[in-house]
Image (cartoon, rainbow, N blue to C red; front, side):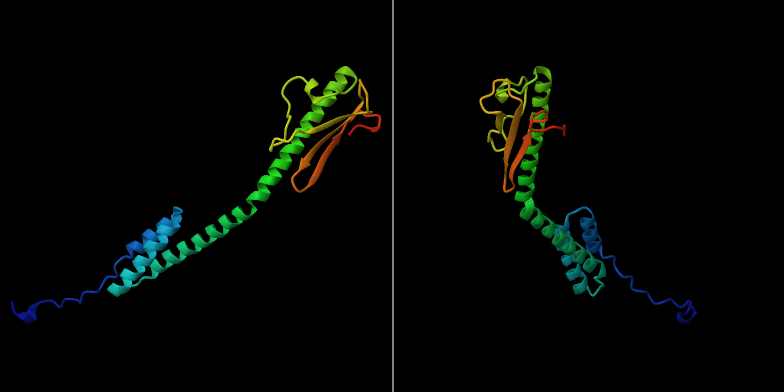
Length: 178
């Protein structure tokens, strides 16, 4: 065979290598590992640039991870900023619920005995005695000096919201039920 008899060979085409680090960077973003994904994306873009290859996937990876990091940081900052308010409102809600529980217990006592107890300690069973920070709920009966009292007032001091007050439902002051 002569050199001229061989079939012509097509020139080899250069196949673009897969940007593995870019794919890993995107994968890390999907699993919530944004900071490592950001770093892997930057390394992948740098290596692709040095090798003369396309770094599009790595760029997409590190940009996506950077955006996720920024969003998470903003959300975390908002949580930290509003946490004291959230907790204060939760404690105030607990105080309101406690007084409502006490009110039901007092009204049940009144239905059973025909009057309200002079002190909360006369209620049987478990009931809320103090607020979430340990302050005792205020309970006053009336009219003043009564033995078999026909009205009461329950009060809790709320944080930055004043006082929450509940009054007896069967009081002589209240002519209708709540």
